[in-house]
View 1: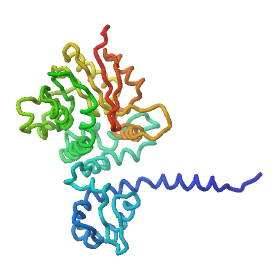
View 2: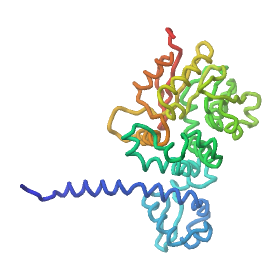
View 3: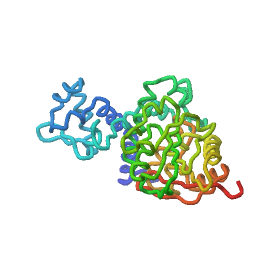
Length: 342
């Protein structure tokens, strides 16, 4: 028997080891976001010692973190050992036009990080690891931990800022419609929808502590929006178009059906429900939704869905999936209308 290991086999083994070490990159990315490195590089390159003084960190340790991040193009180290911010890394600045700093802090927060480390248990038991770690389900934990809730809502707003305008531009809203943003958080998507369409009215629907941070109070939207407090598992406000952005992926099929039914029952004749989530393709190609799906599995009870799964879910809620609209982002608009026999 020939036990000689081929060059390709060694290469494949090395690749898998490299991928197993990949978790250290988001750990380093969190460090840069948490101490605000990018904010201190707006005026040009600085040494790790200078940055350490500005950020209250250890210079040798900070250098090691930045050296790894430089391999992915967020920073660049010059021949004198100074680091500069790249065009890509600029998005880590707190005041960048589209800042992802809060999104990075949310995604790498312990509420997602720790359950991901228990993914084997999730697969074995078919359930989230979150409650065993934190003592309560995901959103119940946020209700009792205001600091963590703030990280989540600020992070979701940050994550959404790069998506909202392309999503709003991808759909032709009927003139004069009332658009209800269900579980709309701080209202970033509704703001994008209403800003370029002066004939539309909007309702931001969420829980009181979330609505307190909404962003709709701008002069150009005066008189065209309202907020509504409530629970989307119980009811939904009246309207013509219902936006459900990154909502259904948080919940299992039974809970998602309840949310969809409440929207269907509240919507006016001819209305539409727009589920804005990743639609998982049936192939082996990379897709961010496939990664997010494991985050949902570890920390929540929901999942990302395929077109077939959305179609079945809509039918069970008395809706007909009429079309899927790409948005130029990882998310698609899954449009539903009231089924004729519902």
